[in-house]
Length: 278
Figure: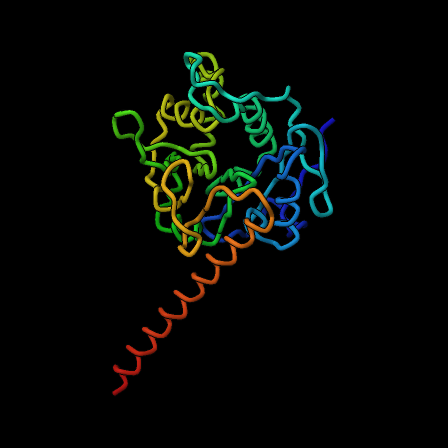
């Protein structure tokens, strides 16, 4: 049996809820052993990360944990293994977790919350995430008809051709991209050799396979596996911070810098207004 889902802090929300435009439905998957439960529980307690999204859901692999007043939604799949790049067809030396996330997407689609929001966002537990910044970025890039995923890394390796990539620490999909995945994911499973892929690579190749376009979101992400920016900048996500102290130190530094930038902008506006009055 699956545990009840963690829902938005506005617990009485319904399909008639008026969300801001564009609205964000955010999800994360927690491994129940190791450092991730403490990270996610601390984020919930402080109301930050995915818990600042319009709606959210917390999934778990390896059992059920309590986050706040509710339990996670268990993804019941066998334990995942680490990838070995020496094995032909393997695309990652991180977790071979595609099957786990295939199950997650099946559950998200069945749950229906994705349909109530312009964007569905999957974030890693150890990613320092600022939903308000993503909302600002997407407010000028949201179409009610087009299907998009957001590529977030343009780094190349081993003289490969330049190509926009989807890194799993921050995955962003428009409503119609999720709808397209719903319609055609079985085709991807049947036609693509995905068994030794990481889940982010699978989602990118699957969506491209069925005609979903990419938006360039390289400005959103600081990731040590792609391009790194210090926490004193105002990226949407900083990845990865695996202890609660490290996570909140980065969050605090970036939040303080954002506040300072906004104060500077207000000072500049005030100065202009004063000159206009003279």
